[in-house]
Length: 197
Image (cartoon, rainbow, N blue to C red; front, side, top):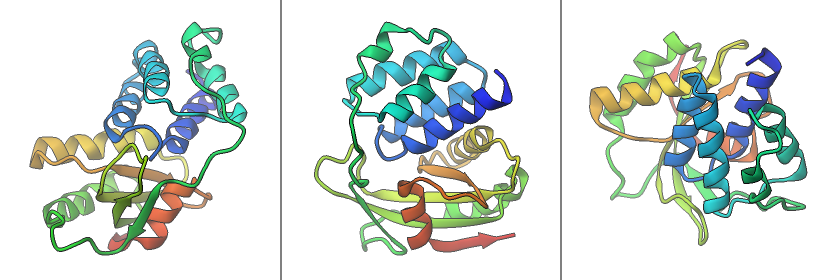
């Protein structure tokens, strides 16, 4: 997969955050990061259709640009929409009294962040509105230095969370000097500063 194609994969994954279920998108990111292109393509397309996630015409073209089979019949099963609605979430810097304690994840991700090109780490509490595919949880956003492989950084961080702590939290990795999609931008803007390089 060449650099332009890999960039398209990374962009599509970022755009789908909050629209696909956290577990599905995490699997897709990990599969692409590991070079499992065919498996990742199938996971992406089948779950977009199964979860009834609409994509824009631009996203359709981006996905088609990196598929192993650009004419895949599975792509035809994914609904194309004229316009996306706002992400069905609200982010805040603090969680409710019943929120799980994020301190162990804060420490681990702060230690890991520099190894993955991290510039700063923010944590936000995500509340979900009706129809959201994901429930309330902590979400981490890690802006990284230019040229960092965002998919590999995501895979490394989420793997560390699971293997070290048996914890699963959504982690969004975004390039530091770019405008992130609405979901990541909202989490970043509301996020509590956990760590800074």
